[in-house]
Image (cartoon, rainbow, N blue to C red):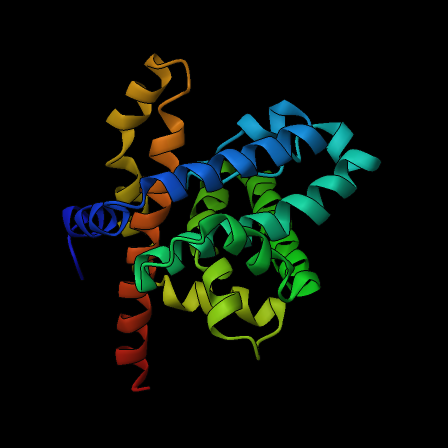
Amino acid sequence: MKQNSAYKNDALDALRGRWASALLCTIVLMLVLYIVMSPSVVGNMVLLGQFALDFANPLYMTGAGFVLTVFILCPLLVGYQNSFRKLYVHGDTACTSNLFSEALNGYLRNVGAMFLVYLFTFLWTMLFIIPGIVKTFSYAMTPYILKDYPELSANQAINLSCRMMEGRRFDLFYLHLSFIGWWFLSILTLGVGFFWLVPYVQTAQAAFYDDVRQDYLRRSGL
């Protein structure tokens, strides 16, 4: 298992000379979400630095807002996270085109998997806050698994994420917690800093996923 500093250094190495592509991808995503959704949804970032469904808002429990959120936000989240994994693994700077291509590739499966992730998280949170937080980190690898294992169903991808994250949930929590100083600094810039911070976090999480996946394969003897 790597240290947080290793994931963050790997992310910075991957982003070096590629920040323009990362920033453009993030700006495009934000613009799309602002155009088609409530700004409250766009601004609602959960601990993982991902755009979250606002299930607490009755507008998104029923009606057009909920439909837009599920059928636009869910696949875009898959595309956004995997665009930064491609940047990290392959140095692929086509982040914006990858955002949309990865979202549309297996579109219904992406929608179904991420809808289930948010639904399951919501239901666990309704039982108690702590189980909801734990499940958030259990399900966090699902967007990457959807692309690495196209033969798996949406539910199977979620279950594989849970298995990969056994014993590693706190590690991911700690990784995101290590960015807390940058979050405060981004707030002080009236939010402008988030355009740099979110790509940084997403690239570090992609590095974390690669480490977790390799560890899981070793443990499974695959």
